[in-house]
Length: 84
Image 1 (tube, one colour):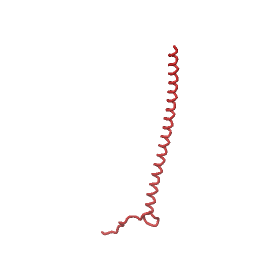
Image 2 (cartoon, rainbow, N blue to C red):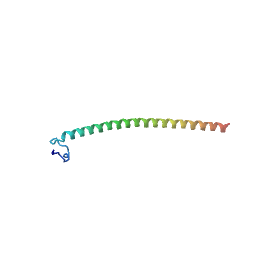
Image 3 (cartoon, rainbow, N blue to C red):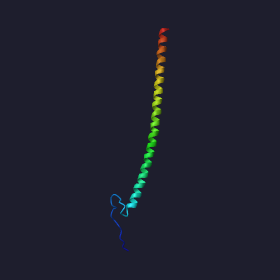
Image 4 (cartoon, rainbow, N blue to C red):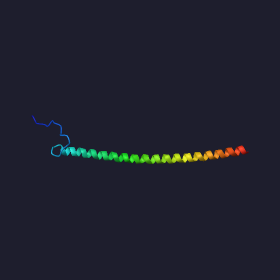
């Protein structure tokens, strides 16, 4: 009826000389794998956002070039109108 059950916490550090060592190493290994997967996902997202930012900067530069071109045409038309 009565049985002895361990009620103490596992030792800190998860040393290999205790019965919790294997479970601790398994837990840390799984945690490390999850963190590596999250790091990979974050790096992929970072690369995606970098490409998106570069595309946005290119589009912005193109728009500014077009604006300068339009301003030059406007000034030319204005001068031609004043001459006429």
